[in-house]
Image 1 (tube, helix red, strand yellow):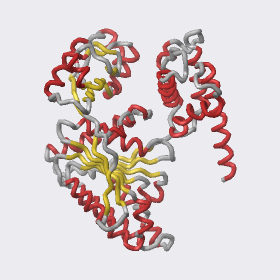
Image 2: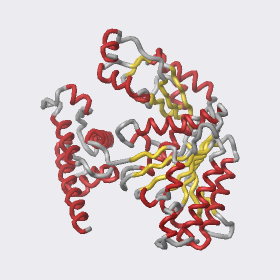
Image 3: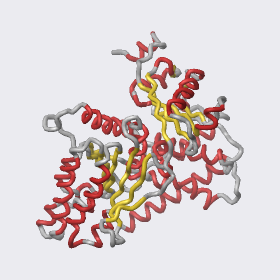
Image 4: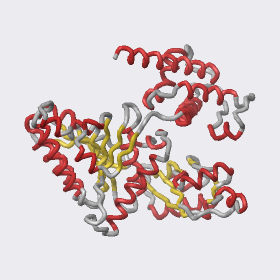
Length: 436
């Protein structure tokens, strides 16, 4: 089936796919959501054709200026195959022919609160945030992955809630509400969990009044109360159960470095792990089996060393997603967003035009006055392959700190500094490997 050919023959034939519109309302606004929705609809009708994701932060209407921080068309790539073709064919997106899903939300500015196991104890079992949280705002957009990973995770959680709402018999069709993200350190697994919870609290704002994100402090819990850790795991999940009991809340539970609570029981039986580890694993598995009965909870877990996780836990994970270092295209996009931010803040000045990888490809990577800096950035991205996402996000800062001697710098000089910073990171990485 020649989909590209069909689209070329009929370029105006657009599938009725969903386009999500996120409307961030100012925290001091007293406007009703119905009013906000009406004015946003009018805005979208006035600007009915866009090229990919787009955000308005300035408005030509007094109501929106007073009450709304931003209106963003997001996740346009949700229908992956079609929108890749749209990009390839340079077709604009006609919002009037789409199903517009408008999500209206306000950010919660409170920091994390703690969940304590005992009233007279200082031990914090977990930290908890009300969602959408100002602290998590923008993380989703900053994470760059290949293969539609973010979209797949969104679809997974959406489907779990949809199946629950439709009363699908979980004895016939099984799902456990558990996600396991695994891969090397520094690839953004924990950040992705926070971003996913934030995104879904916005996406499900018509279904749930608010979201709750609970991050379990498994290390401190396990080390301080080692001899009674199995009982404490049970107490911890009882606290979480109280949050889940509010059916107006969508609850996300993050167990970071889950191997610390789910160490393989065969190691304990062999004597290489203490027997208390068996009780911890058994307690975690029991609690997961109980918690999956609730439709408003999702368990998010991460691990750097999956071989140490008990197989019974791995088997319970509906999705086991590997999160690896970004590709060259991903690295380029990360660097591009960093440079755009530095130009916006006038640290890199004057502003220069930078092309995306797609635009460079359509230009045949031909060097010219307008494409020169973008091609240099592509070369730096290729050299950076193998560095973790955490290092890549720090690299522009390190470039300025180590190799820029002035507060403001031209793009040409800053790219030179970034190139030197990459060389330094690669050298440090090689030295660490040699030491090991």
